[in-house]
Length: 154
Length: 390
Image 1 (cartoon, one colour):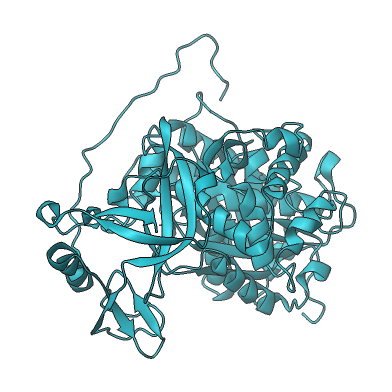
Image 2 (cartoon, chains in turn brown, green):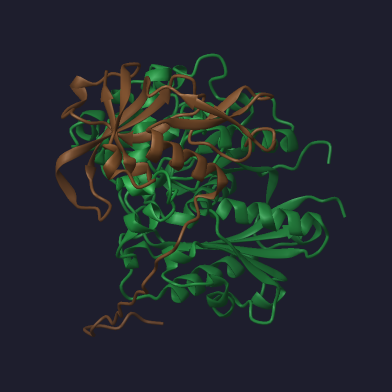
């Protein structure tokens, strides 16, 4: 077909209301309950694989075992990586970039992703730094990952 | 039958920042027409069809329902994979090797210019309970990964900028490329940070385009109109889907996929046995991470950065990488990215790559990654020669 000349290019816009409900599951419930009520970070251990998964999970992704042994890990850990992200989810450039941290909590073998608080530029941060979890006050906790405000440099 | 599988035809549109005059079905029709013409077959001779698409990227649910007509697949066996096109090549190889069919068409396309909320779609792929509530732009995951990757390998930010400059410059010799530019590492290193330490200039920009690849059994391939290229190896793998327990340094999905493909192809020293590489570079550091995972620098990963600096991965180097321009130069065509890598392999191996032709290229490797937040990858090895013992 030939490309038409001097005609309007027709496009239509469309969308749907897309919303879902997500079930935390048994592993998630263990984690969120401990976080909300006791301000603790709880994972599950796979003795065979020497893994401690935080947040807690119901099964081991390595050996496929069902996990039942709960482990409380430290609210302190090591910064594995970080980024300063200059965009929001709608792809708009932010006035101030948001700092995110990947942290290995002491006692866990997995990492956790959350915000890195009270830093404004990469020069203030280095991989390997000690960090600690900052929790919301108990009255404001709802049983969500946002019960954690983020990490801050120790 | 002996189980050999050949690529007998390719059809494609140029990658373009936008395609306002053509619908996605027309892009597919054009690529399919060219592929069947290249193979010297009629659409009716294709026995099975594989399309590779992600519903949310197409703006449609159950995309399978939208593909038969424009490929000549009405009332024929067909299905859609929500994967990169290289997984579609693996699918076709399996269908042919099983003896189920002899001729398969694989399609993947991008109409990225019609996606009005691309970052929201990626966000919807992020774990909804533990990660998504943080409300970050999903490309930030690449920034996190790059920072750790540089820290662990000793590869420098300058070397990453050099990848972007190389691939954008390579694209100047590729008429299919949407983003060719003569750039130096100083130019790309001057780009602002998008997700520190990742710069805007080190992120591939989306492009529209479509590729159709026709594969056939040995008998059909040897009778084809165009020179067949042989699928010597194919592999695909995923790492852990969770951000918490995946390997953030090594592209394990690529290492495992490559081992699978190397085993099938009988390759023990990829750097020596394979003439050129087309690998995923949706973020510039990914080219180096993927080359390491492909086993090119088995002793010291940091070699990847030094090899780049020494020009070894330039078109005139010992192991050319992304002569096509990669995703950075050609454009990031979403699920079609892996098939544009295949197009480059086929053109090079046939000696039809024009001004960017690599002299004497006999075997090439294509590698794909599904992008953030995934750990999904595939590898294909094509050769103009059959295995000597076959």
